Amino acid sequence: GMLMLSVGSGTSGAGGSWQGYAGRSTVHTGGAVSLASGEGTASSSGMVTIRSINSGELGISGMLVFSSGSASSGNSGALELGSGAATVGRGGLLLFSVGSGTSGAGGSLQGFAGRSTVHTGGAVSLASGEGTASSSGMVTI
Image 1 (tube, helix red, strand yellow):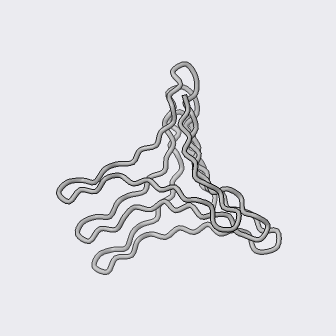
Image 2: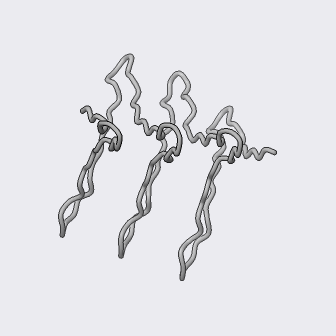
Image 3: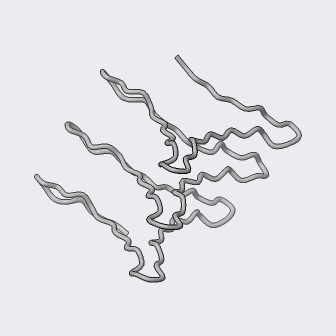
């Protein structure tokens, strides 16, 4: 089966928007939002694609924002990106790629650790993978 959610197009204004929210709770944890591909028991699992479509000739393509919320008392949320482990075969790939510029500068890749006004600021760490039967991986900056 297939589930398709679609909103209207705009010919003289903006196209329609689609938003989804989980429930709010005043005394317990709020509701969760989960999006997962289908399992392939004899083959590959499905793919999940979240992207902004290309812009028109005079525009810029849309922006993707992945963000955890703020916390007024306690720790703020975490954002985790990762690939699964492989029992037989290679581990997954996590790739960050920034676009090229044909009439301007190429894109930038920036990373910042958190600031603290009362404790040590956040750390930035980059490490290669351990090779238990061979060499560890290489880090190139």
